Image (cartoon, rainbow, N blue to C red; front, side):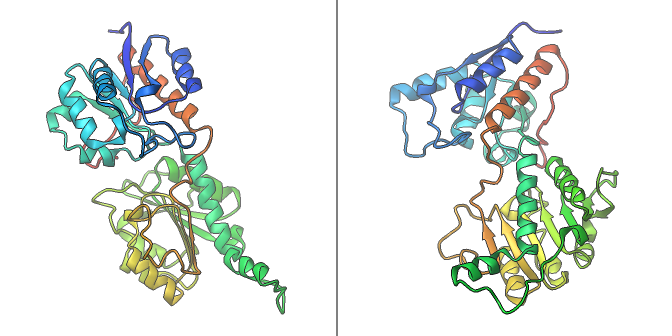
Length: 351
């Protein structure tokens, strides 16, 4: 049966324009929102907020009361697993939580909710909302490796014109292996195909994917890696994907293979990656994510001449809050009308 209203507690900071967008798209949503109770943004879409900001005891009580009176949450409270667990257990009417991160399942897993709680409260993610920005960064990473960005920077800094013309690799002549053909991977495949590259992609199910010339079973990753020019990792961080791009895969690659990671840092074995970089098997690595974030000062990735780092910001854009608000509003309509939600988190793999 269709429902009349849905009380939604905004558990993270949300800008006025995005809040208004939710109300406009789904007038049956009643937003419980008090910007004075959530951590202020440091930049657009800073869902975690300023870590130095703290609530007074009175503000904390008011914040928890807001959460405990809702049917649904926009965002994980303070992006904190413990706060999520407290809210689920304190609010028996809660039945839907939307994470502002595409990979918010990791935080939900850390909340250690029971199976009964996971069945009572549906969790949806913002998967797909960052696909175009991440795909652009993946393209940037491969182009940076193909065109010798680091060498060009060094030549410019030293005012070196060089003894001869620089020979550069042509992406349109490359074979690119996309490791993970989910929402992000599909857009990555489309972008590289648009430049004329031959695109391969990993799969477990074997279903055809647009713009992918060859499907590779994930168990055959090492064999495929030995035949490509670039590898783009888009996989989420799960127990199954941890260290997937490790010593076996990186030992198989051809010299000067380009590696880009826009998935999760845990998917790539960084010790094995550094060995491959030192040996020249990986000629260039562009990493938006690392296993530990922020990247520790002592990590050799900081200073390696074959590495380009981005502080897990490749997904960010000024459009992100609006896109997530629109996704949330569409799912609110589905919930109110009794239709299945989209982007429901897998409660076994937590993605």
